[in-house]
Image (cartoon, rainbow, N blue to C red; front, side, top):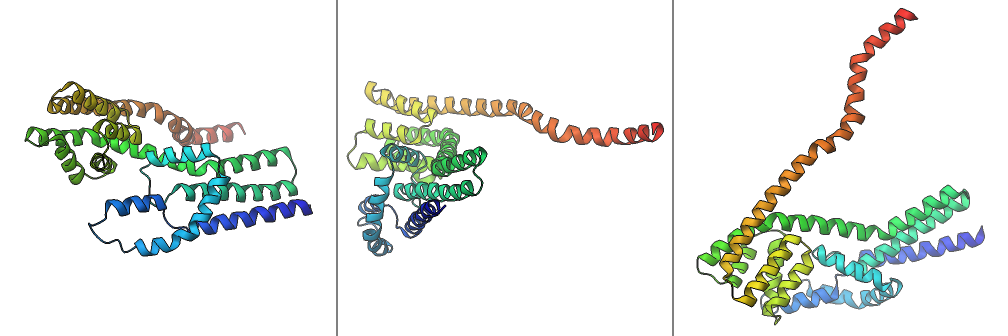
Amino acid sequence: MPPLIMIAVAFVAMALCALTWAVLAGPDRGRERTLDNLHRGLHQRPEQSASSAEGSGSGVLAAITRRLTPSASLRQLERLLMRAGRPPAWPVERLAAAKLLGAGVSATLSLLFISSEPRPLTVLVGGGATVVCYFLPELLLHSRGQERSQEIALGLADTLDQMTIAVEAGLGFDSAMARAGKNGTGPLAEELIRTLQDIQLGQSRREAYESLALRTEVPDLRRFVRSLIQADAYGIAVADVLRTQAAEMRVKRRQRAEEKAMQIPVKVIFPLMMCILPVLFIVLLGPAVMDIIDAFG
């Protein structure tokens, strides 16, 4: 028992240290430097001095967290963060610390529970809880990325319509994209502005468009990006490409809505059979059953 208690105390101490850093750590320093460079000369950022004061303390803990986390897990977190839009409150170091914290706390509690009741079922439950707590940040990021991809897919047709009207009115494609990003809301407008910033920073159009498709991982947007690249390579009019893609996106959006409407009867069968029909049978057959029992009792 004493060695188990010592191991549990060590896990709790490590978890408390990681929790303290996860709560008090500042934002991602690389992201802050990038935003400072983009906003330099435009306006003053009042939080710059406060965030710079926190950087020295969080840098050491960030390095320790990266050393304790496998490189494959860090790459997976980077990919999921990119798909989720890189929320400012969720830097990679904080997510890695949350993974270690969750796994440490769960392992400590599981160890104490197993030591009190050493059975195969408790070992299985404790191991499963530890694994789930370790992968919980990735599951949350995956869910956030799926929601963001759905929002982009839903707003793509309307955005293409706006860009088509702007191009046919005489604007260039970059100006039409800037107008759609400025007037629009949601993740698609943010991605359009990010793509224009990449082009202004020196990336080629092909690389910027491919980065847009890679960040979002939306099949419809990837197909539109491929059409743009081919139109740029073969000299096809952008207005024709926009008009064709907008019509196709509207048709696909209608088809997805019809598909979801056809799935509703199948999804309703389970709650109907398990929740509604038993209560209906009790209400209808209950009095008859009671009368039969009284008659033959």
